[in-house]
Length: 319
Length: 290
Image (cartoon, rainbow over all chains, first blue to last red; front, top):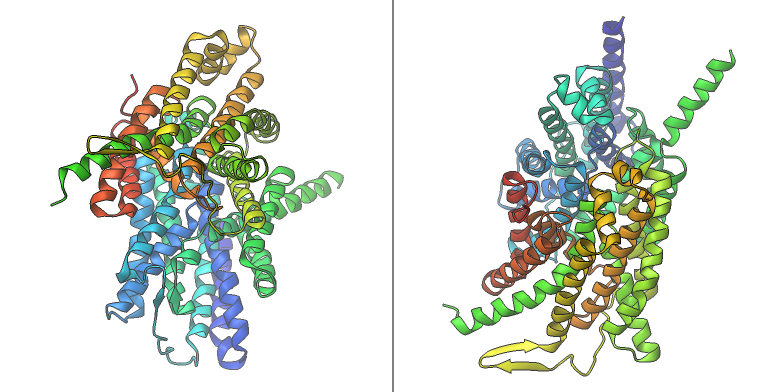
């Protein structure tokens, strides 16, 4: 039964990805791909955040740092002349995963709040470092030459859209697996009671580190594609807490700890932001998202999926 | 080669700056050590007090340090109320750990953006009669705008230390950090004690805000650079350890200033942060904890 379910899911995922891959050859509307990538960017970051925050209780406030360091890593390779897409992508993932590993390895034995404050501090430290490095463009920013699109596509952003759809789907499958497989059960027990889980044979440290690695790899993967999309990196928006606030708000809007939550929350918030960002300033944008986040976690901390689940529960009890 | 005089000056200036680090870190360190909350919004409240001092200075020509002290009772009440609300909403909700942290993070963002909306991005500073003065002892130059806060911070840290270790209330407050159930058994309301701690922590943020704007001009984002330093100070000194925090702040102030003098200001903060991570790896309870 379970076996059939996952085969079916993989089939659906492949189907969606195939449709997405062929879409740009039929449907020519560059703004659609431009906006869709931006929305998917936040969906993927929300997935990565949810793996750690939702299943593990480790709150990462350095989303901007993880995605940004990877973006800068791949942009730096491009700048020094390595133009192979896969190499830059891989390098970005390695750098961001390494960062996540070091940060988590040092803070995993103390309470989770150390990780949170360290990740937030990291954002500003990395931003300051990049600002001071002329090789990384400093405050003026780093320009990236527009790469040639691969075979069937006429614009590189079309290819990035297909890639982002695929990454989001893989993130969804990973999250679903994390909820259902052994790793999810271990994580749930850690979230409930770390000490009890440890005494019952759950390797708390190893499991947490594993999730940190997966989460920061996803952040690094999508972050590494960012320079190809914006073609211009500057530290103020790349390494900002704006990215973090939006990601966290997406997760809480959709429903934390649920594998559909980031897709729903990131999709809604990303789309709204993509449509209104033209009309309002980025500071006001951040104020609105910040207030949304605080209101959400105080009044409806389980998000849309939590409400849906509760309504399902009510309906079932009525039957 | 950099002359020894300059290095010595950087050393002494580092100690003075360390005093400011101490008062900023104290609130965060108390939060983590005694309440198990890392108050990410602490620096936001500090800057709120700085802007409060700026406004008081512009309207009534008050000294920024006096203004920070005058605002601190209000911040105490604010912190007390905030913690009661925080406790009711988040601490009792055990099924979603970490939600409180997200709340404080959201609060930091809102505070920054509100200050941005009210005061704009331009740096604001207060110029008092001692802003440009320095005391010269031999070849040592001590700027008064940093010396005054240092002396007051030193006094404050000692006062808080004695309050927490010698008075009945202080002992009760520290007890809550150790075991709140036992505290409840001996007839002390843990929620009240915790609210007082959080209120005190915000009161120190208000004082720190006054010192900060006396020492340097500020922008709505000035608090950010102190998050890493406060984290490092708290980790090295041991969270909740008042004296440890003070010594660690002096240490990092000196180290940061020497590194800044030699390699540029960026690396001061970065090196403090790296040392903090190393200390967490080797001695998670802090270098200076018994």
